[in-house]
Image (cartoon, rainbow, N blue to C red):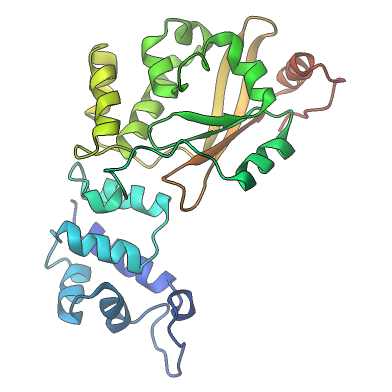
Length: 282
């Protein structure tokens, strides 16, 4: 951990939480934005003195129990937990990966499925913390199905990318996607989680192209960007993507692809049997 990143993170998140967010009265004469130290200490069940030491960097090694209490009290999002792990380095506590003893959730809320229906014919999918594809649009089926992405039971993005030879033909920028998938798996795994460790062991047997990437220090997950795909029916595509966290769903994410240029827009229209211009480039 460099300098006082943990203390700075803790103080910034405390100041970003409003008393009403955690059921506390706002009161008057509030000199600090967000929560007072005494309020966060009370919510987390620790002393004000200990919280002060953490924020000032005089104690940089809180126990998993204390971290778990702070994560809950601050209502940290999936993104915040990922950033906290990056700050803490490789010693990711179980507290930052809830329910690691439970299998990754394979169900998708009805409301999320309704969102997928509204996104048609755009390629969109929902993945869990280890990259299993839990649900997708018909547009994603037409894009990814012919490439073998959805052949697994369940389909799994890192497994496809590192073990299926078709992945390299499908993705001209394969090394970049491999970096992102290994990092995503690292962010969603923990040595005490047998479910993610089983996948890590399977991919490690493939060789250094996975293990070298998985050994790297984690970085915050990509939330947007672009990918090049090569489809057997319509050729090369440039796809922009946006990834959104689905709250309280075992680190599930919704990924949506949109055309990155007019050529891709027309190609996706052909795949979807639609008139040109139905999916406009962004």
